Image 1 (cartoon, rainbow, N blue to C red):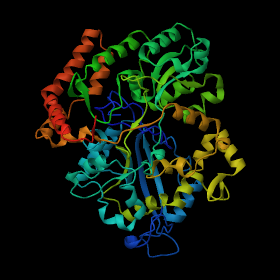
Image 2 (cartoon, helix red, strand yellow):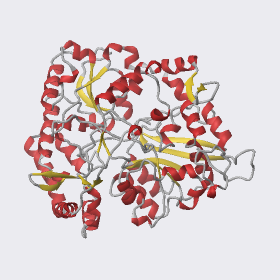
Image 3 (cartoon, one colour):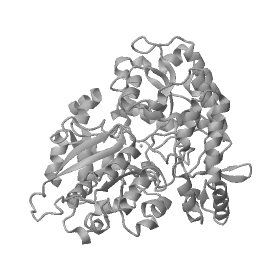
Image 4 (cartoon, rainbow, N blue to C red):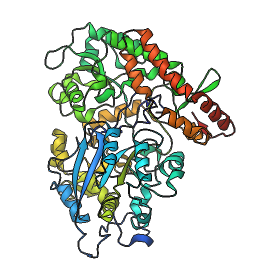
Length: 575
């Protein structure tokens, strides 16, 4: 799954985030707050053992089970192998765990899909979905379903599956664990398993390399140095030159000066000059604390976005693009500049193969409102991540947990990332190395690797782990694309803020639930997008002020004052 990260529909992510499969989540107008199962393992101490026979009395072979699996991420099926059940890795997984997966993915809204499966009571056995917060978006939908009995309570099973149990804590931010993962409303029960979390070390935090990327041949033709484009003014000037430059895509049709991937992901990259290194929904402006929806920067952000749109500098279809349409634009070099992750996984198979001269370059990095580079902001542990949950109606929960436990063992990780020992890789000093001709096949055609089954398990079923830290690839063994991605990460160093998010303080506000009820139907991002396409600036500002006033009427200013007072009594709160 292409890994991305989104705080909620009410926050602006700089560069995060939803990773081995395909696109998972989409940034918008958020203001960036930004193994194996051990049989009868209740008393086991080896969290990395490789006995995958839990839940069966047959010590020679695990109990067979066929389970349905949903990747509830828009575009999340791009990494699925063509032969889902009998690719080499799937066969080995079945031999070790007895589990066969029936894979399903979506190309629609994640919240929509979750609401549908819960409303229709058709929850697949295993679901991987976004879980950025339990107060909004997908996380709120999942929590509600858990409280209504539609999710399996995992608590009684955790001691039996030590690798799963480890996933519940390792690499999870302390405040997120306290307030969201283990919300008091859940009464000590655990319903979701964190995925794609780091192993607990700063080095293991994945860098998503969000930013603005421009076609290198166009920059060269305009004699523009990509590193010089680091402000919104310089960006607008570049896009204006592109528009008047008569540049073409690979079909000879005019390029679109700029755009995004599906559903506007991630147009916030074009507005990053008004962002900062934030970890909460609150900002300090003019000597007082405000909620991000009330920031004076919203007007400037809106008017800048409108400037791009009205001047023909931004794709008018960006907010309605499907994943398929967005990838087509990418593959043909239709977008002169795009905002998202680097998209190397897609581009190396298409545009970079047919037209290598069109290789995109990272602009800037852009500068935020404090004059620092715009980059990924993290806490020591991850706050918000993909999660796995099991249907309350699953007939064989042990099979699902046996699978997850195995895949998070040393043996399981090797299988998911490297394939079959001797066929795909060999071990040298306990470190895996690709068999030379296999590596060449994978490098020449990434779809071969996908169809071997080496793309989907690592992204959907693993956490508390970093392949880069565990198996660092020497520079002389990296592909040109791995080197390119690493070069982006070097220019976009992660900023770690070891603080408790101020957002959690709002939950103790006496009127918090009343506020939540009043704002449940409000969608700031939706109104912001609507304002972007209003007939005039005056009408656009009216739409913006309208949604801001609705938050004010709901009490957002009183809530910010409460949070400010509580934060003043502590020294560990971050905005």
